Image (cartoon, rainbow, N blue to C red):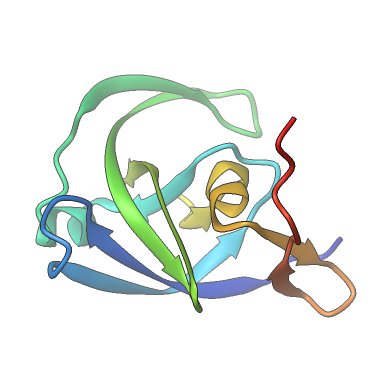
Length: 122
C-alpha cells in the first residue's frame, strides 16, 4: 500500500475548546488504535481513563500504555474515540477504529483519505 501521513486536530471530549494539532500522523490501518503524544493529550486535559493497557507491537514486544477519550478531526470529518498516550519513541499514528469513526478510507494509489460512503446499518 505504501505509507503516508496526515494532520489531525485533537480535542478534549468534555471541554471542546481545548484542542491541539498533530501535524504528522502515520495512517496505519493495521493498528486498531490511534496514538497521540502524551504531552499533547496532557496539554488539553485528556484524562488517563484506562491505565496499564497491554499492546502487542509489530515485533511481538508487549508494552503498556494509558488510554483516554478525545474528539479527533480530519478535514470536515470528526469522531470521538479512545486514544493511546504515546511515549517518546512510539509511532504517532491514526488507527483503523478512528478511520472507521471518521467514515474515511485509504485511497492507496493517491496516498490520501477519502470518504467511505454511506454507513452500513447491518
